Image (cartoon, rainbow, N blue to C red):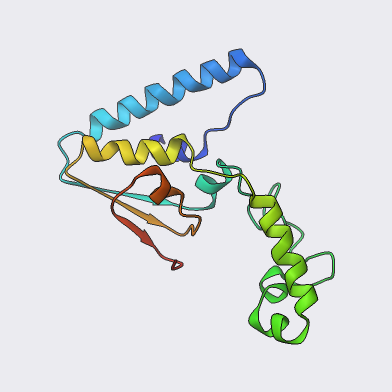
Amino acid sequence: KAVAFLGSARRSSSSSAASKEDEEVRNVAAELASRLKGMDRVLFVTGAGMSADSGLPTYRGIGGLYNSGRTEDGFAIEDAISGDMLATRPAMCWKYIAQIEESCRGADCNDGHRAIKDFERHVGEVWVLTQNIDGFHTRAGSSNIIEIHGD
């Protein structure tokens, strides 16, 4: 629960709810740090939820850019931004690349990324295995990152 919570905590709109959430996050992080203290190695596995908390939209799912499974032009997003589409219909490809870029503009690492980095002070060796290619774990200062989608 604690690791999942760190990667999916959301801010509430009211300041009292946000303060309560902040306190809960600190408590969960402290409990997790206590349990991990003295460990030789820890592996954190992160994915789209971690990036979503930074303001990056997911492709699919609730609030996703393409949660209907298709773009407005009827393509799967993977096809719309593919090399084949770029070669045959570049304007279509660039349209969707621009949408993705606009949706991602201004996003940055979040408290979850920084918390994982902070565990490096308490645990012998910390590794992050992530499917995200946003670079936020690097920006937060984590040392040992494996990006399974490449970089």
